Amino acid sequence: MAQICILNGTAILPDRLLPDAVVVCRDDRITYVGTAQSRIPASAEIVDAKGGYITPGFVDIHIHGGGGADVMDGSADAVKTVCQSHARHGTTTMFPTTSTGTDDQIHAMLAACGEVRDTWNIESGSKIAGVHLYGPYFAEGKTGCHDESVCRAPEAAEYRRYFKSGIVGIATCAAELPGAAAFYRHATKRGCLVTCGHSNSSWNEMETAFQNGMRHVDHFWCAMSNVSSVRKRLGVPMQGSMLEYVLSNPDMSTEVIADGMHLAPELLSFAWRVKGSERLCLVTDCNRALDIPPGKYRFGPEVDGSWFTSDGKVGWASPGSLASSVMGMDHMVRTMHKLGNIPLQDAVRMATLTPAERTGIDQQVGSLTAGKQADILVLSKRLKVKQVHISGERWAKSR
Image (cartoon, rainbow, N blue to C red; front, top):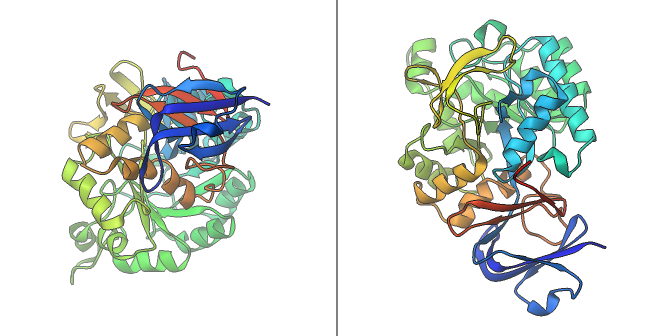
């Protein structure tokens, strides 16, 4: 049996840092996490963390593209390019995320993701735990950089075919759309994390959604309602919005894009202080411009997706209008920790165990725990990715 032992580093656990850690893996599983040097097998391959950090592999529940490809390009090659691109940044588990698109484009994306998931090997990069069915069920005026011409209300005959693929693990719909309640109930029965996003819904609409299974809101403060926007839609008296509902309901989780461009440090810190690391996820919401030069690119399908411009720091749909991020999860963790002034173990938890728990895969991934999949990162003292191990195999960053 293949065994590796990672030492000379600080292990990042969900609730604390563990200096002088010893992490032992056999084949594709973690077998020991602690400090006992006596637990190092004589035959193990030694991995020297060189005084850096040993962390679980990152889990990204909201991710569109990278390396020049978007998962909505609808081919296995494009999906694999995205998986490889994000593995370089420490993501070992992902939920490729649809944008708005035609029925045929979404089915092509689901099929391509299923093919890459089912034929995974270490060359593939990040593993696919499921698909995030994100577009096309967005509210008018809240589409952001997505192509609004293919937004629509959920129709049972359409979305039931998506769920029949067996790969959808997260499902999003704007709460105020006709048919949203039925969509939420069906997604809940399928075992999905059910979310509201790209929505101008009121408190009462959010409460109805919650009663039908909705438990998460996408990219907090982005393409979501506030008291002023709800008043503009529904008039007076002013009503609560998604913002107040999520902050007041302890069972609701949400996510932030901590790229340093979408949200200022005080908002990152505020979200963590109010929701805590157990109900706040880090996501990249990354587009195809990760790790490629600044320029003009398509968001969503290469053939007809909406245009955006990357400046190397963030995507822009138009001057002043953001279009998702161009950064990997390692950048999000560094930003949350350093600019948000958030404890390192909390920043890492929000990129690992919390999204794993919310999507029901935490028995397999998300923490350095004996018995879990050996998805492990070695980070430098400055939180740069040095090594990526997926299911116990080292993934080469040069790929």
